[in-house]
Image (cartoon, rainbow, N blue to C red; front, side, top):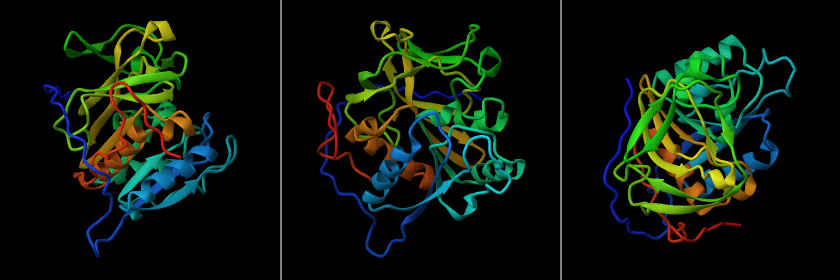
Length: 293
């Protein structure tokens, strides 16, 4: 099944920043997985952790794999102990038990968050590609599934031959909301300006049970593919919920108030199916970025 949602855009209101759980409510347990990545995971994992914890919604643990090329047989995070798993990992395949544990966790109702280069991982792992919907690099090509683009007011599956994953130069770019009724994007401005980042394009994969919430234009003037590409989307996998954002190349990109708000709301939705986190007062506008320090 392939499902992509598109609804008319509605001007969103901006509400004050009031994160946190109700008094006495237990925080959601989250796990960040890192240890290998072609990006600087040692710098970005602390930003992800701080962002989630500062929301007041999560307690966050980190599972760090051995370095690339080393034995991963004893790397077996206890996914089932957590409400949501955030992948900041792009590296060697895990052991079969660890991979099956993630499949069972998500399929059974666990939440999964994919950040930026985590969608480069495991190009030859079919269940992972089904969980993330779209990915890049890692040997992906037309056999992995179609490209998905927003063209003339609708989403199009493009099965043309070619590799999966590319990006132009880093630059500020607009994120355009395509489904303003989903809990993650509800009340967001129809468009907002993300700070300098890699804009992933030409992602491809099974693209099944996927709802695209926002896109960004991969401008040929910046070396892009010339299409509006998925930038915020979700995937249903069994009983589980997957939130996927190709944004977040490095620390500066992750300091964007738009990225952080989307991450928090996406992680909360993946964990619970609901979003209680409001759009904060410092959220970017269509013309102006907003960064946190």
